[in-house]
Length: 489
Image 1 (cartoon, one colour):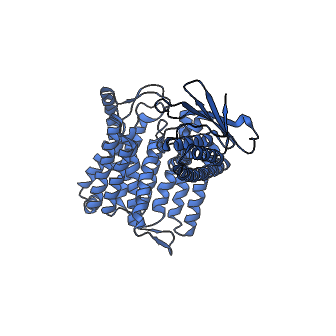
Image 2 (image 1 turned 45 degrees about the vertical axis):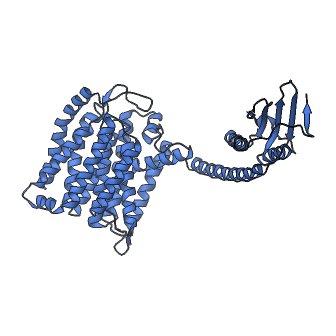
Image 3 (image 1 turned 30 degrees about the horizontal axis):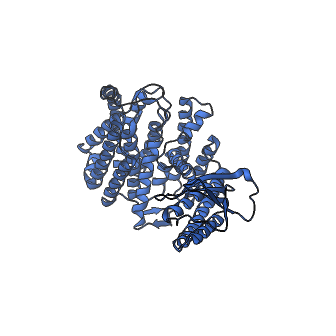
């Protein structure tokens, strides 16, 4: 116990000493975060505070290796897994630091996370089976590596995305570290206990400077390092104990960042935006919109996390089916918190998914129609057949009408018109477009005017116009000729 206390307070003191030095260094190198449309702070703030967290935690972890006691011997006996975890966490920290200083594409950070997960799986840090109850164990086999990757990458990015208010990511991560430390001590996993206590101490020291009003941000170097280390440590706990609680407790402690990330991904999917696109609809943004001050919003999330984590500790006592019920109920409470904050609405989400499905069905129908018309246009041999193919395309694409206007060099104008058999019920919902045809040397000028029924959406009408234009681009129109349907003006 003396070693545990020394690790916690040692990392706490180191963070208190290192953070001011990092603040000074960040200002010297220009590593500051300036206010913008995505931020809530109003003044330039140093953004590489994660350096202080990393240094204070790793120094204390490294010092335990040389101790001449049972904990030190256990550290030295861990060998490959411990070295792999430290090396992987260091790589993630370096990637985050480069991103803070110079900027990196999201795919580079994602690739680094995948590479480190592969290294951990090779070293044996992976979820191979889960003991759901005392009598029921779920063996994952090869799926264990996939679950490990999803968990580590997901938690890493969830912590990274939660760093939106002063002290939010650091405080929630500190609670998660404390919960995992309690479980590690309870289950006799001294290596993970030391890891989590070192992180907990460094975060407590860092929060002295990071809580609102923040004098420093942890940046990607801090949030990625924390997320990756906490996720990897929880997997290592699962590796040693195989109990569900080893993964459930971190999931509850990080439940708000995890669900916030999942709902953000769902929201961007429904809005057809990139999964990496920024927005201001996270739970902390919603709490601010409800009128809470930054500090109050952060404290509210702290309290919710503490309640979920505290109740989750009951799972260590009930190692049976009751633990599954506790876990499910606590997850439901977290989801209800998001509903109360206005982050997610069931009816709106269901309607959005239905709209996505209908739109996908419509696009597939339009694509099949287009592919049929492609073959039809390729069979055209003369102007009469070409005009018939144009009329068929207009009919199958639900055009209201289409006209081809031909202007000859002598000023004569010819116009060919096709109209839908039935007049559209709402003429105000027509999309009108003019599509010029390529003009050969000395040939007349020809231009289509098309009217598309926008009975579904303007976007759907625009897709029809795009597909019709592709047909004209892919098939060279025959020389202009007068037909029986031609009107001369």
